[in-house]
Length: 248
Image (cartoon, rainbow, N blue to C red; front, side, top):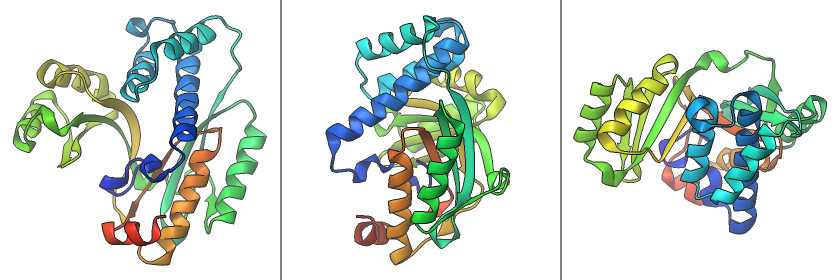
């Protein structure tokens, strides 16, 4: 989930901790299985699998779950998933990109369309909002790895494009094609990253205030709860006060 920097991940608003963790592990397992099926089952020889495993470890997913997901993909008997992407608009006119892995494109499209329409949004045509985002690599580190200046220096040295730092940590952005190289250079300097992934980053942010914040959060929650959805990105900018008051 991407938008306002403090709300990259909507999991923090979920009270159903165990259910959320199960849902998250399910999404991570699916990505690992798809990556293992698409290439070699060895993370050292499969960049996508290496990324999926690293992100699963960052969420404290048990090693047994990770190994099981890899074996499922390597065994060739895993379900066949298609990668899908939907674009649309949410409350307040925010632009949203939804990425998914599904074994039924028709079901996924119908469900996503319904979720948008029931929560103050509308699904757009392919390409309707993607031009407002950049496809980038995102590498995050906890705050304890170093000061803002130290991380900025390391990022520049590694060839990164941008750095955002706050009390929660450091987020480093790279050009899509430089992602693996920059991640490796940063690991040599700062150690293992908390997460490494390819994301859609909004070029400009759309302020959302008042009651539309609550409606937007319901839309984002509903999308996140859908089994076919892997990631949701948006260009929304919400103040801490409005998030506290309307975010639920």
